[in-house]
Length: 314
Image (cartoon, rainbow, N blue to C red; front, side):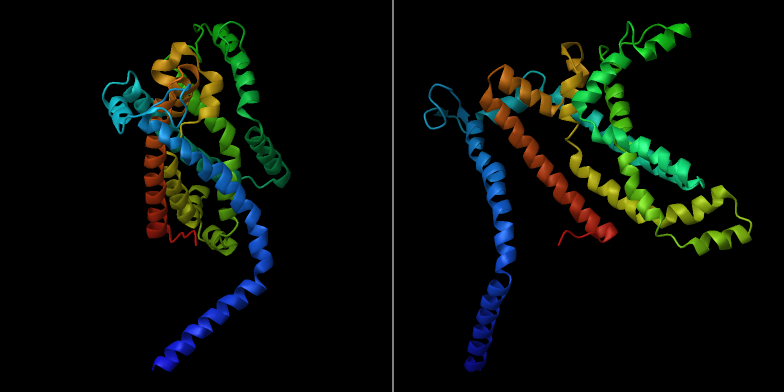
């Protein structure tokens, strides 16, 4: 028996050695990427020590006073505006998740009904374009378009007898402006997933439905939507991981002090207290809280994706 076990162990060792020799080139190809990840993703984690210190820039990381969990206690109980920022983040990100989930599905279903291929491809190309523009460029365009004095939107409203709307200066309208402008940027590219799923539906199902006299709406309801429902469920579940990502690039380029009450989110809040107020310890504490909650959300979303859509990473 012991001889069999020894033979089995030796076989495994030889198999591993053989695997290392045969796959050595693949391991070497992965090595640069692993080094970069270690330097740029795991190396900065050393800075998390700031969250447990009363950080003094003149004394540095190793000379500042250690305060334990005091920064986190102060953040959750006394720091001005922290819970408002949480509310802003959740309201904007949840609204974005709902709109960015529903809008691409509706557009994909409408595109699927277009039978003229040239027209359909032209529309798709126009919809994809905003995805490739950075928020710096789009923000410049939006500031001009939404200007209350000479923006094209407000000029149209004035012509209709409506008062100018301060899209980027009114706290009550700013969150909706962020949601709509984000949907405009991403919805075209998001339709690619659903358009690909639509091609997997058997055309014979549509032919049979036409022979049976089914209308376009009934074909869409009974064939098209059930054909992409698994992708819809998977996409919806995976988006839960972005619950605390309300969009730093977009909001940072478009917001101003007048809309901090409704537009300031976790990422911009961290930037302001860290780089403008020089509260590096508090900014690090906010970053740790966000990272931990995001890790929990991503893990939950992947578990649900495995449970309900049989989606696996490995």
